[in-house]
Image (cartoon, rainbow, N blue to C red):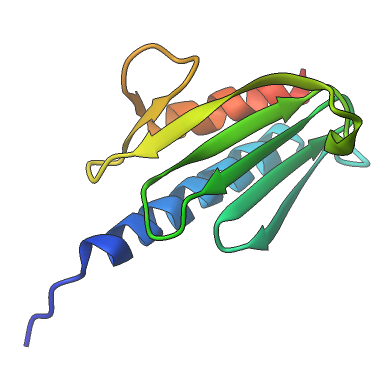
Length: 121
């Protein structure tokens, strides 16, 4: 028997895949660096935080949606109100992403790579 996956479940899996790509790119970029420069924190299923030595990037997915909000702060402590940039993102059912600040739709891995570059700068 074949069962169909709901659109909400598919969107959840796309988010999980994107978060995994981000973690993988950051891990690969830090091979041989001791201690690592970036810590990835996932405090809940819809939140992802990249804590770097010079900045923090927070991503928050709207529950049950394929869109969310991102913000980049100048220091590891976002409470300092040192917002550098912010915007929205959307993950399409085809795995392509719209991301404020990036022209056109992007592959998920291209966005993960861009986030890795930003947090390691």
